[in-house]
Image (cartoon, helix red, strand yellow):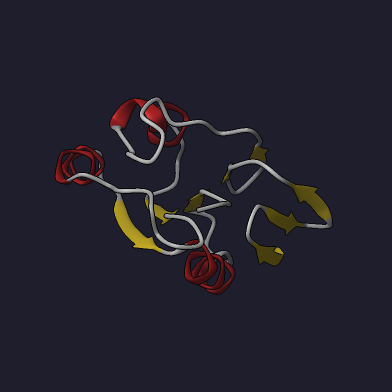
Length: 112
């Protein structure tokens, strides 16, 4: 459960993080980096596509600066994912609402 989020900081199940994260049903991947900074490409999601989950929530930052190209969305779709792209604050709310399902992952950019 995401307890709080504000620019550059998130608390998940009582633990604080100050770098981007991917929340899996059973763990949190800390210090998640994208190869092209504010552009999400398929390589950035290698750990996601091998997971059992089928819903991916992408938090694009406080101001929504991370871009998810059509090619990346198509890549995820061909692997059976439903993808929800929102600002990180909205993505946190969506994740908490859907997290009762075991098949939800959230990839969250915490800053801009």
